[in-house]
Length: 507
Image: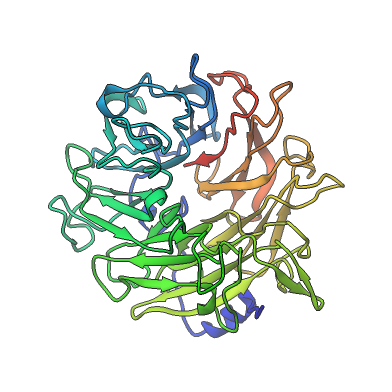
């Protein structure tokens, strides 16, 4: 595998001078600079929604819940937290919580009705709809002065198809106006919502309006090979700089040529030069697609180069990496594609053997499983957090780690064994399986929520938890004031149950 480092990228764009940008969230980093897309009560601090899609609701096993923890001047707080499940916000046809719905599998936030309060979209991709098993649905919960409220909640499940998994992935974007046509950015201030339907290799875009999300969808797309699961992962951002967001979809199981599971990514746009662009690892300089690399399993968009346009980062967490002439299976990589006015212009690849990345690639690290972008501090520019949930820590297999890369070429390597970080690294915790960056409080920097998907909570095995690291202007992410959240945390509604998978989705 050919590898260019971020040092090489910095040299390539050294003549470009870009202003520092405060980014409060990822993956949709650019739009969040000026829009209230993750603050449900508009108090100036981002809030955190956490999916536990395997949580039982009454007698319904795996119905799923979403916990909401609100931000404050002192960071995330238990006061005022909420637990949402489908008996509170009914699905299509008035259906409530159901066995195996997996409500909370995917989450997205955006101000879909432009009332100044962020709203929450929740995917329940295995909900049965009108007799169609696992057709899937999405529920919208609207924000207000007191935070999220059931009043006016909305359910989407158009044209249900058995096994379609509508709602398996979600992302907010700014690309359509209320008539379903492409606006100049700012002509329509409502957030739009894209929804993945990977069981049928499709994804859709629903425009926002003063009354909420509109149906039918303004646009629908298909991509990937048969069983490629196009739409299983979504991201959005203005890659070509024309003022209208591009919509990016991963098909991580897609067959490329004769290579099963190599994966591909498609970019669609209502304007500009990027509509219908198809990417595989063959588009990475000096590389080629590889079987079972699952390119497109993680996506993030933000101006990380930086030179003014959003860039696209793509994880291939099961990719083998050549290190000291030895192939390391499942070590994982992420690939960076630079945005420009003419579209995608260049690329680089990073793995744990790259010059500015700490640690070394090891079998089954799965570096690139999750990617988050945010300004964590430590100088100007955007920083990257990359999950390696298969990382072995202190002899604990797959305890997991997160690597943070700063523009000054310094880095951080975080595990639950670090002093001041809550929890203890334990076998198969999978820390770093999910990541979310936002400014929850304490400073003006972005903070990082790290999913520990299979952490045990007492007798609740594989219940899941979250570690939160706070950003600082001088030092970036630090352990000081870090928090450990689970459904057993004091003051948090709901209780941990075995297999809940709290942190399976965060936004």
